[in-house]
Image (spheres, rainbow, N blue to C red):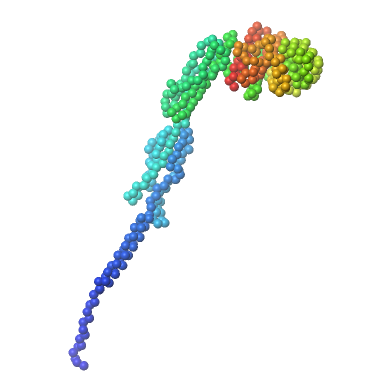
Length: 437
């Protein structure tokens, strides 16, 4: 072996092939692009949401506005399935907040804004408060006025104001009129509407009376009629019943008065409800009712039987009929009566004249001009029965007004020279009260 070292050939350094480099770079680029696209896709798929809960528009009246409560809202940022709550970052702005809180009429816009990552997200809600409060309408002077026929009526006036529209006095509309030349009750209707359509109304009643011998003060209720009687010092009990509306009123209903003429009404009712109405019975009833003939009454009571008349009267709610008198001792054919008795008696009479085939005939016995003290100028057709015995003066009757009614007045005012005028005055006032029901 030669002592010389063996030389091996130098191995050449191998350099990468260009195609190899391209592959590596391509892989890196694709990886980068994939990561970028995935990130960009995630970014694009993320969302920032501002949402209002409930309705976006509310409308309340000014009376209901206090019921409004904020329905709520929420905000969030979601990336894929993960979300971040941003509700606390929402800014709520309400122009004229104080007016909204005080429920002033108007339209209010509530703005909700979220500033996040350079973006602005906004929404709004509208609350509208409308005017539901009517104007205030005030009548000057009394709401009931009393006059005599021939006097002049001057309207005391009125005023009207509204919270929104201000003074509306000049816009008040007045309907109706007063004819002081004619007895009656006249209604004046006042009305006003604001710009929102809310309305107010008021009424003034004007009573035009015939009898200037007494007070012209307006009497619009039965309590006022009672007080009117008391102030005049009259010993009078009274009762009232409207048959259509079933309205009743009594003052001192159980006080007893001698009813020498009123006692005869039961005779006619008994005959027409229980007996064949023969010619002779018709004649007796006519004389007893139309002419208040005492002999006709005693003849009827004898033929029917006093006990039968008592039982019949008791069956319809009368408690004193033919039971004697605290004024004139125990008598067989006459007796005391009360407002309660008269209410029961004439209510049943009304039922009979409307139910019986010959009810109209019964009715007309009570319609005549013989000593009619329930009559007054302008009074409608009416049935009545009245009487005077000593100081006991009494009137009962049914008036066929637009809404028929019964009235009775029992008194010890027979000694007064003007007792008949007192009765006519009370009948007139009762009629006008009935017109207002």
